[in-house]
Image (tube, rainbow, N blue to C red; front, side):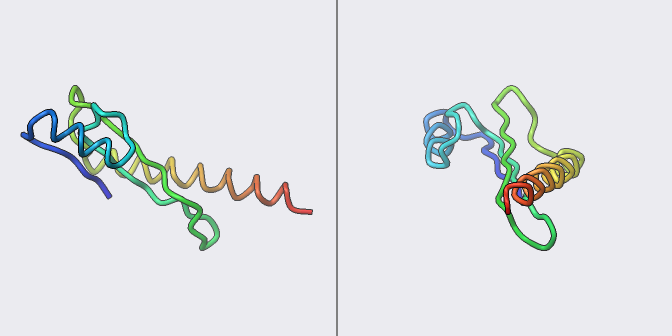
Length: 83
């Protein structure tokens, strides 16, 4: 899922980002779910400031690929820690 702020006063943008506990200059966010072996492990969030363009489909595809890799690493780390 992605979110963004367009043509909004700077103070409103800061409040929007702060409400999400993101850096105050964030204007675009993209979240990808961390899933491994049918389990949801969390979410990874990618952020962009005003100097960058909004996220597009290729960015979402890349984020999903990164999320798979993170989820796999977390899942394997959990398997190693189990007796």
